[in-house]
Image 1: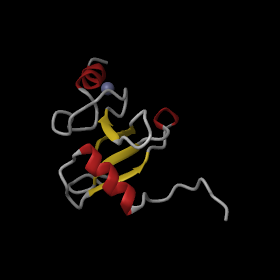
Image 2: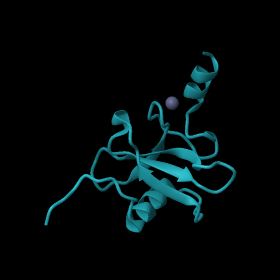
Image 3: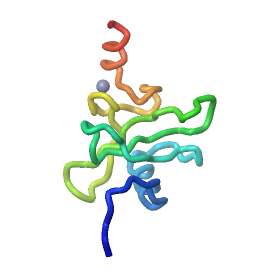
Image 4: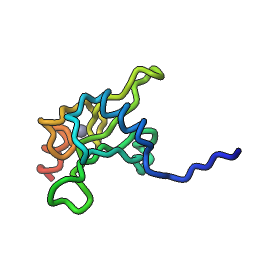
Length: 103
Ligand SMILES: [Zn+2]
């Protein structure tokens, strides 16, 4: 048996685990995918693929808890600060949104 680092779609069990930990509103359009930027290594991007966005709407970053097996939390895709699904419509915290708007 060999293991590869090939990125594949996250298995359904992982998706279920992550979405349950994040207490996301359950809906079939939500999926998780490995975050591909180095700063987000080990994290999963949570995407809502339903709607007018070709590649889905980013809900946020699923960040593994520091202690193994203690779950996941939803964080800002830019700074990893905790965010809420409803107050961060693009998966970016208020501070980062303001930061981006001010430049
Ligand atoms: Zn942020």
